[in-house]
Image (cartoon, rainbow, N blue to C red):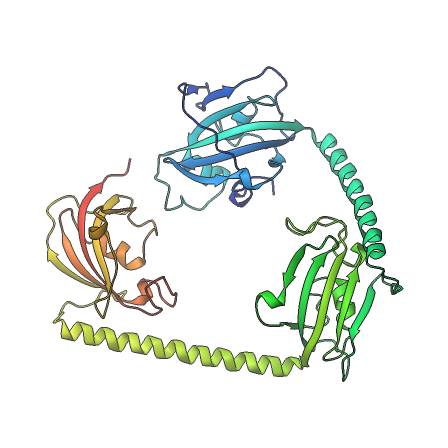
Length: 439
């Protein structure tokens, strides 16, 4: 798969450059552009690796920002997907240039990102703005050479760090055949772990410079996993296998039995030596583990069923006590019209502006646009709101008012949503203030 044909890769872009000033120019291809800084010089070609800062957004909303990437965003420049796309704009730039480009949001998401449909926050026909500063570009051969040189420099640096760590900590324990240095702190009792047994360990993971990567003490409970599955590194697995229950050890795991030349996220560079402080807390059979897990799942399902039944009982009582006689729709929605609208009917794709007050069955108000003094706007049928709202508002016309009784199945379900507990039936008083046609 080519780089940037997936939105997840593209979403790492950053650095927001002000897009005020001169008006956009329009290329023959239809691409709109304007330069803030423009230099003479070579331009990147398809296949070159470019390094840039980028921020992009739609309707004055910033969607992605690359300032979290210390060295900028680097990727191979793809060929344009269509006339007037972003890649055409980047090929207009020289090193040090900064510019703004505008293109169709529909084309970006449906063609470049290959999304099955527009995200709910994007209005069909709208434009996306990309603010770009181009730092550097090199061809593929030079990039591969630079990467190889940097990796070799890192390997030599890591070797020096490993030797310095052993010297500074006066470690004289001989490494095992694999390279693992096993320093026993406390002897345990019983048998050693066997393949497929479940082992529970207390674990702290560090680098040789003292950087802590992970610790079970932060989560307040040991880490349990199936021994023999190599959940982290070969060195950790070997070291755990040398412990008995209650035993503690420090494991110094050199890169060849850790992650090797592979970097792990932002915290673990290539060729890193990993230091583990590990304690074997307990062991049990896989059968015992599965049995406990099944019991917990059964208990959780029982609780879920009880909550669902309680919700239905409470909703039925509410319907009866409030004299509601309308029949629910197929989804379970109770739509009680209190004032018929005389304006435009809300249609899927329209932007609708709605005043509402939402409350639980006991009368507790959890949100209200009326109190905020401004209607809530969203694109109808785009999945921006709970299903009960999309269904109900589509039944209304401008000026209409209604009370909605929305079961959790078409609201927030089993989720705990702020002040809304799991399996809550919600009641909304809504007014459809206005309907805006899709442009």
